[in-house]
Every structure is written in C-alpha cells, then in structure tokens.
Amino acid sequence: MKTLRVALLPQQMTWPSTGAAVVIDVLRATTVITQAIRSGAAEVVVCGEIDEAFAIAEHRDPRPLLCGERACKPIAGFDLGNSPSEYTPERVAGKRLVMTTTNGTRAAIAAAGFDPILAASFNNLSAVVDSLAGQCEVSILCAGTDGVETEEDILLAGAIIDRLLDHPNWRSESGPVAAGRETIGPLGPSEIAARTLWRQHLDTGRTLADRLAETLGGRNLIAAGYTADITTCAQIDVTDAVPTVTRRRPITFESSRGRPGLQVPAE
Ligand code: MLT
Image (tube, rainbow, N blue to C red; front, side, top):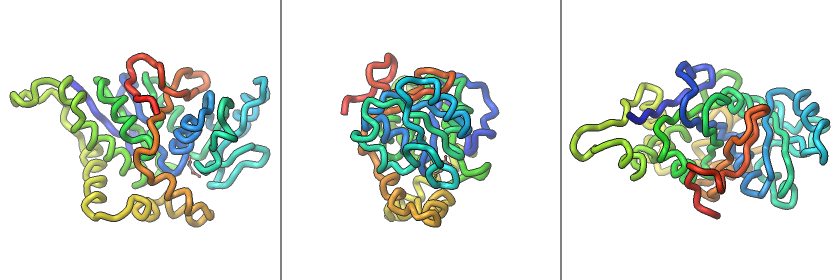
C-alpha cells in the first residue's frame, strides 16, 4: 500500500523516517536551494546554526559560499542572503554552498532519516511530483515559521498531494484502482486540509503571488522589504532541478540528475 503523509510542522512528524521525504519552505529556503541547484551550484550543505556554518566553511578548501538569513536579512560575514534572485549562475555555478536559515534548513535536518530527501518549491513542483511518483512512502515536511504552521508551505504540500494522486505512475503502481480495490492508504486530516487549501486557492482564480503575500511568511517578507521574492517563489514549474540529499552528515543537497530511482527530465 502506498502512503502519503504531511507534517505541517517538523515536530508533527510522529511516524518512522521510512521512504521518501520532501522538505518545504516556500518562503524562501527550499526555493533558494532549488534556485542554487538550478544555477549549477555543486552542492548546498545545510545547517541549523551560524557558528556551525562558519565552522564547516573554515575546514573546506576552497572556502564555500556562506548563505542564509536571520529575521529574513543577510547574516554578517556571509556571502549571500536568502533571496532566490541572488543565486545566479554567475554567483554560484560550480560552487559549494553552506546555508543556514531560521526554519527551512532545520526542517531539512529533521528529515535526515528518510531516503531520498528532496527540496520542493513551486518553482520545481512538477519535477518533484514526477520524482515521487515511483516511491511507495512519501512524507511531506513543512518548515513553518518559528513553530507556527504557515499557509505558504501548506499550499505547496496540497499542490504536491493533489498532483501526486493524479499522477499516472503513482496510480498505476498503487493497484487496480479501476477495479475498485484502492491500495493507496487513506488520507489523514492534515493531508486533506492541505489539499483542500490548495484547491480552494485554485477556485479563487487569484494569482499565487497574491495568495502567498497574505501568508505569515509573505507578510514577514513584505515587512522586511523582500516583496519581489514572493513573485519569484510563486512561479510554478520554471525548472526541472530537484535538489536531492546525497550526504547526511552534514545534510547536503545536490542535483538529482543521474541519481538512480529518480526520474527527473533534463532541463
Ligand atoms: C526560513 O528558513 O525561515 C526562511 O527561509 C526565512 C526567510 O526566507 O527569510
């Protein structure tokens, strides 16, 4: 039986770390990781604390780029902040990055026991869903903000659930649905709530950027002067890049291309 679960916050993940995990911090950590990999970064190492990021960078030659934010702002002594627009091929292609953010990188660390672990954003939505469709167990892990559930992450969780349930590979491998013997496990309240939130958004006909601007993460970014980032983070399917964890100590994302078991079309 296939299982599909969502934790609306990392601490809500009360089940074993088996199968695939997708980490979501739409505004902005997992969108930034997606953009970095899309732009050709060699790897993105994530860590929880600023001191840890400095320590990791210090022991590597050449020194990696230090990236991330606190209170949405760039960190003193770091090379890049947390705006996706900073992660251009000119800045990051071929480079190793070490990133720490307030919530997103911590959510990725919380997913350490799963295999594979992917980073999802609206920018790579279809590619992530294609990658997950062949998996038997999928856990979606929303970062939230400082322990509070955030609609921007739940919207993406809902979009992933909605598309995955309709994906031909997910359905065909989950048994003879047409014969009435459904072998996809039942959705729980969190999965249904996320899917409903996404469908309600679609029914409004409003732009995703407008919707994201109303969320907790969106309001925080607007207050900090990063309104333009919301538009970037709201772009759906602009890349096939799927950041995938290849090492766990510390958690390191690389491009999934060429990784067995994941079906990601070349960009
Ligand atoms: C986070 O990890 O909390 C976010 O990436 C915050 C931000 O985008 O500034």
